[in-house]
Length: 215
Ligand SMILES: CC(C)(COP(=O)(O)OP(=O)(O)OC[C@H]1O[C@@H](n2cnc3c(N)ncnc32)[C@H](O)[C@@H]1OP(=O)(O)O)[C@@H](O)C(=O)NCCC(=O)NCCS
Image (cartoon, rainbow, N blue to C red; front, side, top):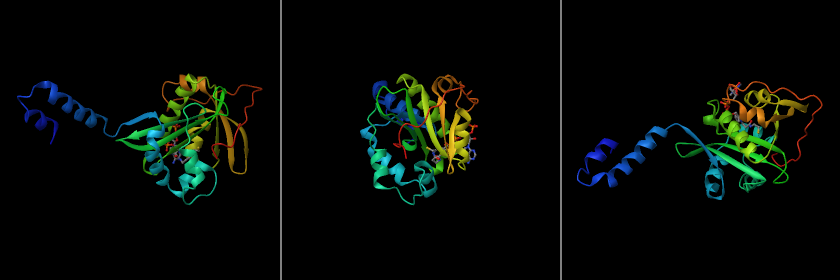
């Protein structure tokens, strides 16, 4: 039943009953295909498990920096271990389905530096979901008092290089991986995640990844 039919089929029942249902349906139609980013918590465990178990070996391997054919139990345990302070998870939902996952992890809840990771479902890659998540990670980081985001990516991972390295500065490179840092102020201040230019390196600063948490 479309929205118009729904409305016409209850002509005598007043706006209070039919209009909210019609509006809800209209909102659902309008949001179709749109990506909505929200915090992930324990209520999203099933979504997270479905998301990670559905990733291809290549995406899993790029995300965890180790060859993977299937999701390993320790990787799923990590994916479900967000606590909202030291380990923050953001999810990108499209039509109610989790299609992107962004992580921000720090060793203490007041640490100014956090490691980040972004993963997008295979079928949703290349459509701006990763950039959107990174932008929202930046906003959240700023609210949490995080000033620098550390990323580790594989040097042959073109999408990740475009996403992270173009917005940050490289700290170290070797064994097919590079680690870099993004200045949160510059990231969150950019008008659009797609238009953020390269972030100027600060001479003399060097921020190393603090943990192996995200690997
Ligand atoms: C890396 C990843 C998160 C990027 O997310 P995405 O939604 O596919 O990327 P977007 O569409 O937002 O594009 C981001 C940038 O990468 C570029 N890009 C996207 N796919 C690309 C590709 N296949 N080759 C080259 N560049 C690509 C876009 O043009 C964009 O560049 P811009 O910012 O200069 O405009 C995603 O591909 C992914 O999940 N990969 C596997 C896991 C991973 O590698 N994670 C990173 C390490 S934690």
